Image (tube, rainbow, N blue to C red; front, top):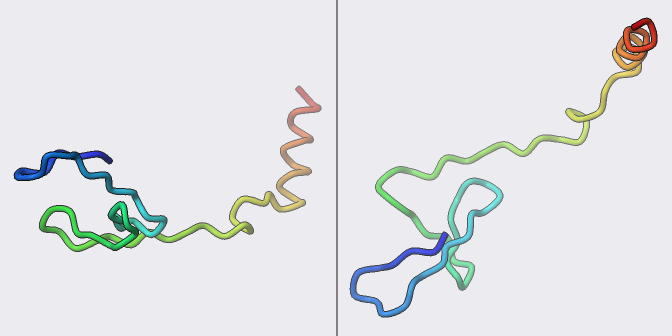
Length: 65
């Protein structure tokens, strides 16, 4: 996110961190607004893998159609 800061001639860029925080251009964590940072949970790879029995059921319905 690029923002204009009062009193600064140049705009400032902030980068969204993977955990829901914001980082300055130099990589330092910053707080934007008056709320506490909300940490987000990263999904594990297992959450994206379809179980074998579910895959067989889905493929069975596709082949039947």
